[in-house]
Length: 140
Image (cartoon, rainbow, N blue to C red):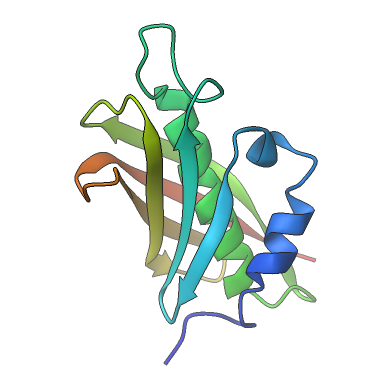
């Protein structure tokens, strides 16, 4: 069983993100499973804060990117589209270099809203940030 209305096209999502903040930060979608969407982001000069660790805002951009694409893939695009309503994040561990990976999983998939949990980990698999994003489902 899958949560997707249509099979997620990571190629399409990455291509459509090419001229946006998503690409500027080096974010790319990497995997979809029957109930999750995964992406990664480099920890480099684009995503560091002046203190030399991953900027919390960059983690939030990764989280909302994953929730937004996941929500989009979960609805019938002929009938609805999704936009972010609210996001929160708890930053748990600093990261200085490498890559972080985020996995978005649904908490609730309703007709008018969706709630997604996004867990971001470092290369050692340690939890860096946990986020929850609420998406509005807007009928066309």
